[in-house]
Image (cartoon, helix red, strand yellow):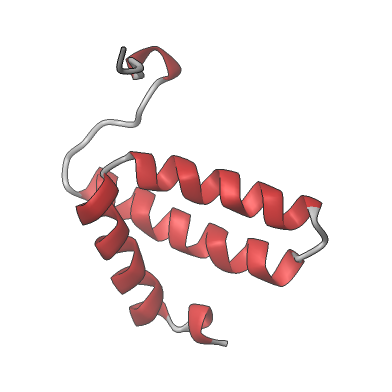
Length: 75
C-alpha cells in the first residue's frame, strides 16, 4: 500500500500543509472519520497516517498546537 511508505506519506503531508496550512490537518481528520463511518477502515487508516505526518511537521516547524478558540471563521 502506498500510504505505508513513510516517504510518500511525508511528501503528501508537506504538499497539503503548503497548500492549506493547518486546515489540511483538520480536513484530513474529518475525512478519516467519514471513511471509517462508511466502513472504509483501510482508507481511514491511510488518511490518519497523512494527518499525523502533517501534524508532526506543523509542530516541528515551531507552530503551536491549534486550539478551538484559535479558529475565526471569515465573515
